[in-house]
Every structure is written in structure tokens, then in C-alpha cells.
Length: 231
Image (cartoon, rainbow, N blue to C red; front, side, top):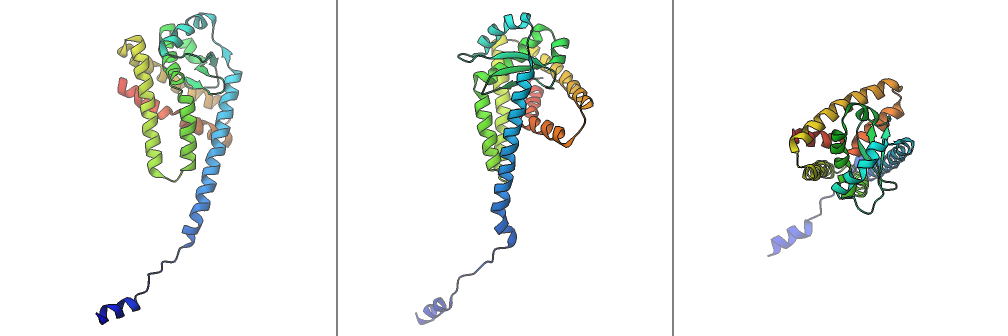
């Protein structure tokens, strides 16, 4: 009994010295989260300005927009359908003043039936209150910026969100093949729109920054994966 007690008396806890990088980690984390939150607010403000500068859709589309929104289940929200030359892809904006922005080139190149498919998809986002959920999600991703699992979960949520809206649009139209063909044509045109916008604007750091951030904010990568799944 004496020997074990003697060894316990000699035992000392192992001390691990913290390196400078471990002391700096909380500071780096907070600075990174602050930067991402500021960038999120700036991106939302830029999107609101684009929505304010957009022009109302033609009367022939406005007359059908009410039926499209009703098919998507948008109730209790006054949604504006507008045309913008500043966006490269269709996008549903909110939550302040819900709007569906359609790129000007899509209005010129696509038929009204194709535009119906696109509006149904974007209206499904507003019906599901995805504008609120997306802001909350991006805020959490900014606060937990260095957590790899959070980023992975966020990408999965983006994908599932787009799949859910695809399902709602297909359920409303009952034509999955036509819907997939419409998305394929739309994204081919959207790619051309993006290249045209890049040629018309100087590639300043601020514009490149906003373009990359809008890609992340609107989940375009997830949208493209959802399109590939339907096709």
C-alpha cells in the first residue's frame, strides 16, 4: 500500500503550454465572423437596390402572375414581378419587399410558358418563407465560419431547398420533363447573361466581390445541381 501512495504523491499533472496560434484563434474567429456579417448586410442592401431599380413586368405577365403565385401557394404576401438587366439569374428577393426579378434577356428569349415555370420556382421560395430562412442560415454560417460541418450542412440545405421548390413547381404544372427542359434553356441563357454583364462592367474588386457573394447568397450552385437532377 505504501508504494502506490508514494507514486501518487509524486504524480504531477501534465502541463500543456498554449501556443500563440491558440490564443489568437478566438480573435481570428470573431474578426472573420464580423467580416462575413458585414458582407451579408452589404449583399442584401445591394440586392434591395437592384430590386428597387427593376421595372415592372409587362402587363401580359402581370395578368398571369396572380395565377402563378396562387399555384405556388403564395398567400398573404404582396409579391412584385419585375424585370432587371442587373441580375444574371432569376431571383426571389425579400423579406422587406418580396419581389421576383427576371433577367431582361430571359424575357426576350423565353416564351410565356417557360417564364411561368421560372416564376413558379421563385414563387415557391417565397411561399416557403425561404427568404427568412436563408438570411438566418447565412447569419449562422457567418458566426460559425470556421466550423467545417456547418458549411457542409449549409450546402446540403441549399440543395434540399432548391429540390423542394422544384417539386412544388412540378406539382403545380404536372410536367416534369417540360420543367427540366425549361431550366436547361434558362440556365444556358443565364450563363450568357453573366458573361455579358462582366463585359459591360469594369472588373473592379468591389464588383467581383459582389458577384461572388451573390452567387453564394442565392445558392446558384445548389440550383444548378437541382437542375441537373431533373434533367
